[in-house]
Amino acid sequence: MRLSSAPSGEAKAQDPGFVFVHLMGLLGVVFVVITQIRINVMNLYGGSITLSSGFDVVAGFRPGRPWWMFGV
Image 1 (tube, rainbow, N blue to C red):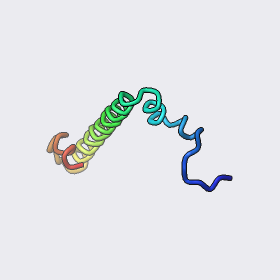
Image 2 (cartoon, one colour):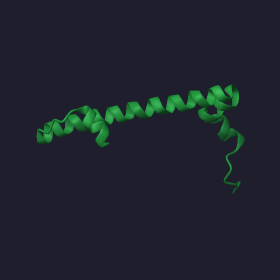
Image 3 (tube, rainbow, N blue to C red):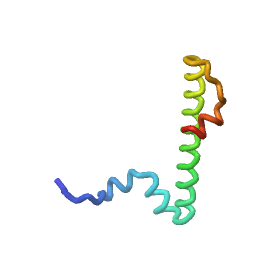
Image 4 (cartoon, helix red, strand yellow):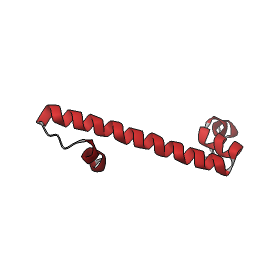
């Protein structure tokens, strides 16, 4: 068992962020950053829909999704 904190070659090969950057260089970095931003924006939007719907049902409070996106 290795006690090193550095990831092994096998662990690096399974990480898509490492693979894209290794194979595509700077374009891979740009691709990974854009993909992460897109995923995080979709998670934020989904959370705002959930909060908006939940507070509307429970408390009748309906400020709208943009307010919840800012609030989150």
